[in-house]
Image (cartoon, rainbow, N blue to C red; front, side):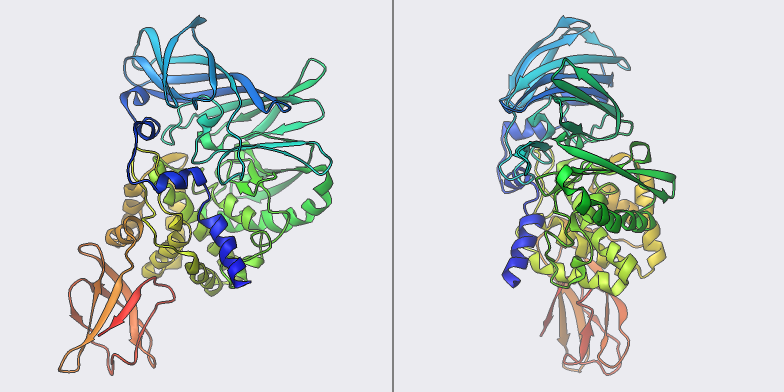
Length: 552
């Protein structure tokens, strides 16, 4: 069982986005990586304001065809722009004011030429027609792509999941996390008798001839491309609501017909308690206008904004297991809590570059502990975080390389959660810490951020300089060593080793028979003025601090 627990936590928490993780393992990057990851003038010259993605899904051939209307605001004069679509997908034509545009392709980048310059501050649009067989996910959501399955009644069950590998895997867009459209209309045509569920709210259903139906979903909030999804199946729909901080939040559930009796009590037990806890810690759910949805999928899950993919088989824990080994993870459904946590960290606050994906995953991993804290107490949440340490690999930094579509280590989950627990412990004021978490979601509401934004905000609001701590745990794999030494005169000294330059971090130190007191330790040797302290009886808070201790 111990090995199974390690396997379970490894399978989910380390390779959540296999394509992204493969990119992370690179030490050298190519032109293809830069075309996807870099914001060149051909991408910064315009800001996407709206997409209308209109797709017809051919299930027997596992192919799609359709169009995407891209509305944009011109940020500077240009006559050439870049959009993105995987090179195995065909571009049938690109129209501008009803006329075909010329374009060239390089890897997954599409360079479009306009007949004249489009002036700054112009609102304009292009219409891109495309078709092809999108990459098939063999282990969705780990490897990304389309998941073509059938339910137990042999009916089609199809989903998209493409975080990391990119939304341009199946539809043309500006595939960079820094640019979110203000709104999106998602139109998906499927065979009659099946339903498509996407993000936002269902506007209407159109009959397309006698054999097809088109489902039109509208997202009224900014949304990142990788969150836009389709989910096709023999779904049944039921509803609920939550009286939250911004009023009544509509809750919609879409599950396979065969699972409705299991789904109703399970979702009732998990979803509204989650919303209550997370609104307490993080502030109002960020997408009241678009509702909250869970959509059953054959793959395990993904944080698709306002339409979360759910495949945890109506079990508590992670497929019935607890990666922390503490038992606390068995008291709630991991996928519901974790993926819904991303509505605040990932969907509301989005990393502008995938290198800072640690922002999404560290805070969301930590949200699991805060859920436990809310219902079972602070110590229980800390025990869960401590238990998760056993999955930390320290293989590479949790921050990736900028501008090459490279995310960091899978340690961004558990090591990130440990980091935030340390920050909270150092602040030593839980109301202030809660105000910081809520403040992050208010300050950066529906915005894209980077490392500096997060660190600066926490420093400013806490009144404590955490810069060297973030640098240590986010940008390096080194674990700080608290060196305890005894001088000839019997005095006990301490300093940090194995750290970044000018590292400082307060840590509770004392003896086994007195209360621990937070002492700010630096890279310089300092005397610990604690009565009766010896190397043998020194006590250090290694429960809340992810450090090594060395006694010399």
